[in-house]
Image (cartoon, rainbow, N blue to C red; front, side, top):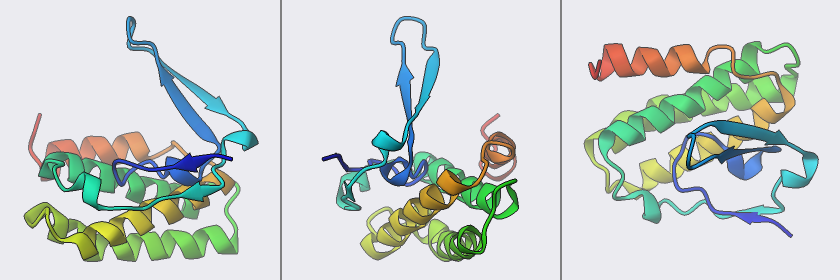
Length: 147
């Protein structure tokens, strides 16, 4: 049995078949995809994320949004993935600014966890990674002016 507890609200890894291993010496990332990696249970508790800085909250939320966009426009999209993608988009737009401004807003954080969960589920079925990098770059440079 596999139980996952996410610590951010971006990747949706608590519901996907993907895992990333990072070589600590070279800092290279290696992706593993296998149906055995899909967790049996996910614990979506927003409390451990209360100490995340606003910048990390924004970037991980935009990561979930990028997964939703991929799930909506991807090559293997379905009615279900498009419905999840729309749900994710709504949840993110209704909650990301709340959490950015007030990191202690547990309801908004919980809604972002739901968004990441549904985005992860949707992009597991659909092709992803086309626009995520562009979206994160856009958030970093345009919205947060960090470059």
